Picture (tube, rainbow, N blue to C red):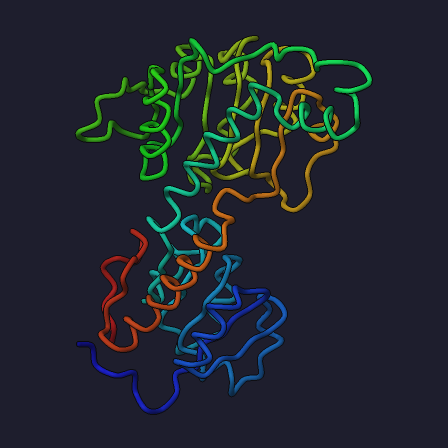
Length: 326
């Protein structure tokens, strides 16, 4: 049993669009204040002082955090939290949580599906059928690429990376990876540098987190190392890719194809990638099933409930894991 949330309603601020189920739960458990976007000027001074929690799809910078003197917790909707200034939150004694685990299997499923769609050009095949070309012109030309005989490199062997690796291992494919350091208990081949990994494989899957450490890590040098038979898939963060370099690599044959679910400036996708015939592009849908998004919504709100009823979060991010409720 947990202690009840204090009888005086705790004010939770929600900037921008948010999951309906999460909003309904927040409104039932707390005092909900919703604003159009993460702009403190939209909240009057008295309300700023009342806010003790923020629930958001990221986009919480240092200035926004500092606008709320009594802020205790930021509950981020999503496993990635690079758009929340967690380091600054830590200096303020503000807890930051995310929603890991509940989306792991869904993202892994989608990533493998994106890889196969890219290799076998399944969107082109469906378009061929729907346009009546199967009947009028006959079978679509066979795909030049296949999953058979491929070697897989994973950049970011965390929870989701491991889930992707296990799925692809079941296809009989060799797996290698690059992280900042080897993962304990993982038998897959480890490469100390991303370039060494790219040289060793012909299929590179990026599931690395965003942030300064991975900014444009997938660049012209890495793509050249992957080679002309190379396929690149990204379901991690768009910021990890130099999109100009990727577009050029796709155009000049440096690599064979790419499947992308994330982009650097979402929802805006570079025209060069849209025009590339050897891409499969998705609108950031890897975790986008009703089932998984509801689970993410519940974990986001459960973090708020746990913090204000027990003083402990369920899934704190590393930067704020040691923060104690005052």
